Image 1: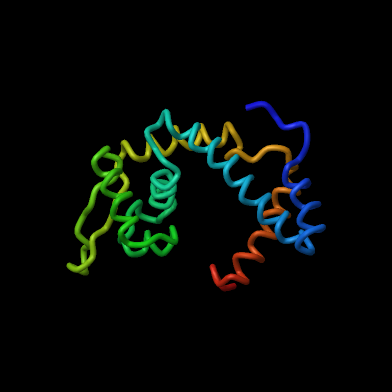
Image 2: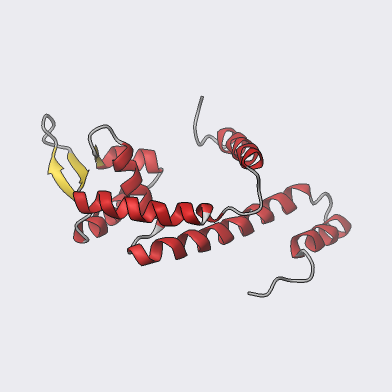
Length: 165
């Protein structure tokens, strides 16, 4: 894609200022949305050769980070902030690819655990190398700027009730 000779968000902000009022929030939100598209495209391209979407990759990483390599599906949904139906779909696909398996909970018969397999561990490792190689799609910032961005976005997430400290 050929870069535009101007920043369309800055131009829209000028017009917004003239016709609507302060463009501060509009320009910030539009920029976040556009950067999300850019990042998503880069991450999707890095994960595609590994047969993963970002949602399935996140699930593998979550299981890898868990103490025993297995979590109840309900906990996966909470940690990934997804609806139970979405978690089921993700697990179904990972299971059909041999990357996870469902196992009964040892003490609660009502609960099913999702456990990462050796193939899942290998796929996660290879996919992680691919997304790290493209810096998860984040370009143009120093490490300190990336930390500041994360801190600022956490403030928005906290204020929106995404999490509590």
